[in-house]
Image (cartoon, rainbow, N blue to C red; front, side, top):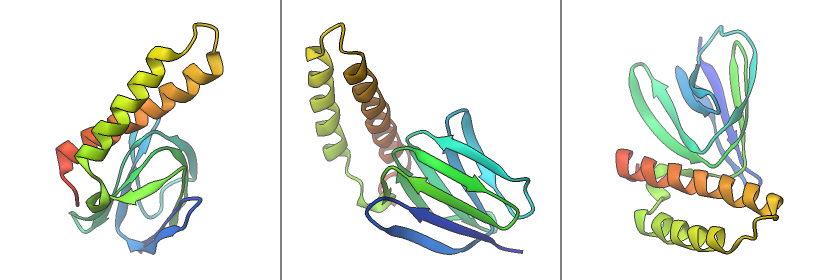
Length: 138
């Protein structure tokens, strides 16, 4: 029995197809969505969603965060943003990291909301950079 995977971002629906398994980056660690699993809703961290056919990864997508709804026959990922790994660039990620680190250094000590926002963005771009360096674009 296949698993219906759907990855949706505010911009577009990136994927809607059947796979054997999907591994998603949960806040508490990576978790597999497979047919017949118990229902689960989880918050995502920045990381790679790997789609499997048999024991082979057929596609990888980078998500910056969001939520996943898993059930016996589906895995729906509502991503803050998502891109196919082949579309990512080490140079662009490094540039965004430098910009965020500069913004972080300028935040006042009492600006808690800005600290939270920049902290989440830093975590995401660091995860993106790590994913591109580990897996390469694709």
